[in-house]
Image (cartoon, rainbow, N blue to C red; front, side, top):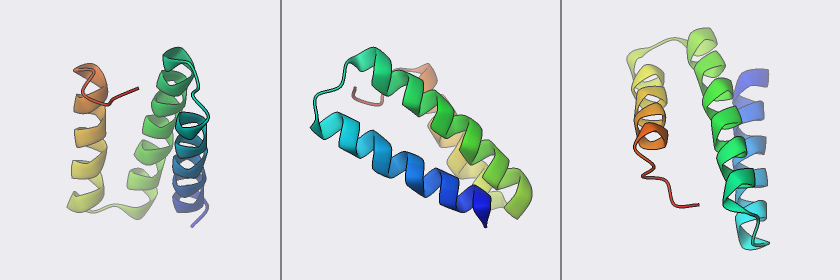
Length: 68
């Protein structure tokens, strides 16, 4: 449950930073931290859906498809 909470808190922080006009580098660092937390959540919770979500986030970061 802590892992899911960490992911949700990170998402809220990213959205707040985005609204406040944070630098792209700051947002990218937050997104990388989100990926790590999502991977941990997926390991703890297990299941294909979690693994697919983490893989999608990892792919988006790798291709710079997430707007910062």
